[in-house]
Structure formats: structure tokens, C-alpha cells
Length: 113
Image 1 (cartoon, rainbow, N blue to C red):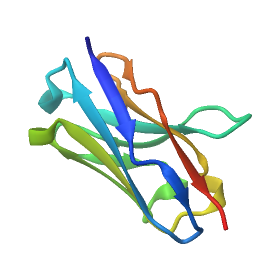
Image 2: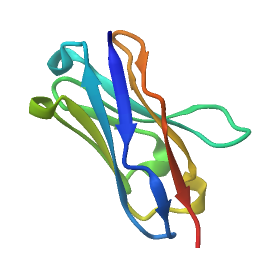
Image 3: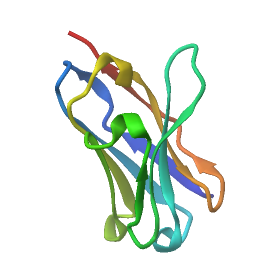
């Protein structure tokens, strides 16, 4: 019932930008903390960013100043704006709600020349 669906991934050039979306359903979205994780091939899934119901944010050090997590409660959607992308950002990006343990299916982001 509790579902998260990511979208917005794709191919981008180094230095480019991309905005990911995470649409939530089956939950009281306004009270939930939302997180983004990513997983590159052969690597562990790692934390990227978090936003609380009060819009307090936390970022992994490597994305600070480049990525921005936000939320639109009316649309029941969390976003990850990614700027100044590098090949090291290439990964499958996942949306997560730690309050209920929900995960999205992931969306592929590939940064390449």
C-alpha cells in the first residue's frame, strides 16, 4: 500500500543537471521524512540526502553544494535537484521513507561524455 515511485533519471553530460522525483502514495506524506540513496554497480547503497517533515535537510558530504533535496506536500512528492554532475554520480537512485520502510524501484542516472 505504501508506495514510492522515482522518475527523472537519464543520461547527462558532466557538469549537467537533472531533477529526480519521488511520488508517494498510501502514506501520510506530510509527516514523513524522505531520503534519497544511490547505488553504483559493484558498490554498496549509500545515503545521499534527507528531508524531514519540517524541511530540515542533511546531505552526504560529496553532494553538498551540488544537490538539493526538497518536497512538495501538495503533490506528495520529494525531489532531488542534482547540479554539477560528475561520472562519480552515476548510480541507481532510490527514494526511501524511514518512517515506514518504503523504497522506490530506483531510477538510473548516468553521467558521461
